[in-house]
Image: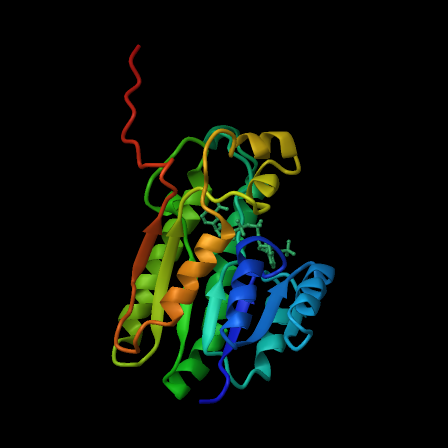
Length: 247
Ligand SMILES: NC(=O)c1ccc[n+]([C@@H]2O[C@H](COP(=O)([O-])OP(=O)(O)OC[C@H]3O[C@@H](n4cnc5c(N)ncnc54)[C@H](OP(=O)(O)O)[C@@H]3O)[C@@H](O)[C@H]2O)c1
């Protein structure tokens, strides 16, 4: 069987980099995408230097179009690039933060998917794995627009499956809870690393490796089986119910 190709967005650090390591070990040819070229280069060197690097912002539609134009084959698309910015209450939050989250987590993810889909359909082969979040299903204070973007990703994933019914293409929305050891909280708290590390004190969050293991598992299931949604939390986390404010 010829070598399969996986395009991973947000491959420079965190979950994306760990997924790259595991898919490399599974024998995939990789296309690694993120803004920080030096991080992508370091990762590629670690993996033997044979993979393709695309250093760009996923919001740059011109750069994405140019990069995708000559791609003959993408068997697996891991839509992982994404972020949360801030935890302020909605009425106090920064509009620019909301725009960046909507652009990156929704529009850019949809745009890249739209660019790659025609070829997947033509080849009748592919697996799109979107990184959603438990924030798309359970509201928490300060999660406002971040949660809404992940609800978009969940519904978009289900909608893709509906449109792709009758093809061999799989779509999965992977919805993790608390994950430690990535830059997610450092980005959310805009570089306040003390606040970011406090998120993970006295508990054992999931790791990027747990998520990469899950993705490797998803990619090794039989051709007739599609996992639509998969929600994963660390044991220390639970959807702990509704709140009531009493005066
Ligand atoms: N960590 C969690 O607790 C958690 C839980 C549930 C879901 N998730 C989701 O999992 C995904 C990965 O999170 P993570 O924890 O691995 O976070 P991370 O360590 O901050 O990694 C995010 C990745 O996305 C890339 N990225 C961000 N904005 C980009 C842009 N505009 N253009 C291109 N690349 C961009 C970053 O690379 P550059 O900065 O180099 O561009 C980086 O490689 C996200 O979609 C996140 O919402 C995370």
